[in-house]
Amino acid sequence: MRLPAKILTRFFVSAAVIFQAIILISLSAMAKSVEIEWEDRPEAVAYEVEIYKKGRKIGTTKSPSKDLKANLACGKYKVRGRIVTRQNLTGDWSELTDFEVPPEPVVPEASATSEAPVTTATANPKTLLAPVNLRWSTSPDAVFYHLIIKDGGGRAVSETRVRRNETKLELPPGAFTYVVKAEGPDGVMGEESLPLGQIEVHSAQLPKPKFQWQVVGRNLKLNWTPQGPMEWMIRVERKAFFSDKWTEVLETQKAAGTSGQWLSPLLLPGLYRLTVFVKAAGWLDSAPVTKLMEIRPTSQDFAER
Image 1 (spheres, rainbow, N blue to C red):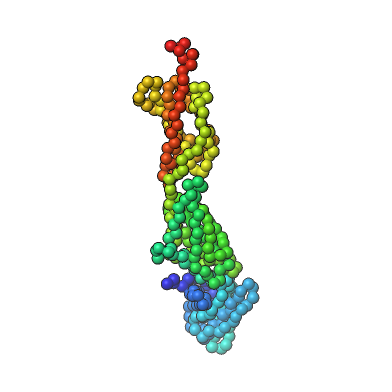
Image 2 (cartoon, rainbow, N blue to C red):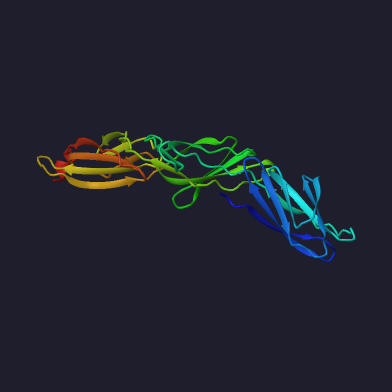
């Protein structure tokens, strides 16, 4: 159960008297119960209180005690008060004090397999993103809902404002949390949803890389289409003619976001084995793709010997 929100304000109830008022707001699905309490003054036999909304007075009441209870709709309000003495004299009106009645908070929808609000999804190996569907309870006074998603480090990765109590978005592999806040009339924001919603996006193995290769003179050339945050790992091994032993010639890495091409340094004559795979954070490395090729000696190679 949520405790009532407490807003501390201050009234001037006469030219010389200052008292504090505490505004208590209890939220329920049926009504918003607002309780205004203040310090009792010995010279007062009653208190007059006025409540305003959007510049218009919506109610005036006289309370014989140091509190007032009212049911108010979600929105922004102003309140002021003054004392009434035994001689039926009144003090000066206090200054208008702002307060808000927030919308009812929402609750994230629990998954079908758990009572906890956990949403799971599996990322697409081609886009490296997973479609995630989120739902939460409705708030009767909500005009919009604010969805805030944070990563495992508590950093906000997505903030969305939607009209319905559901939304669809795409996320990379990882663990995330989310909260939803209802926004009522006049832009009044409700409390964050409880319990904390959780999202688990599972990764899969990346698909085998697709590329074109060719031997250009004494160089090996590769071309591919860059896709998402994938890094390309390239390894070249050489085996001399009439030898059974492969020796690594080079291994290089092409970072994500760079051009989709690579040209090797000059290679010696021999048999070559090219191995290429791709990797990305949070994913299983792709299966390697292996190509065999041959660089034959030229007449210039024999002349140099």
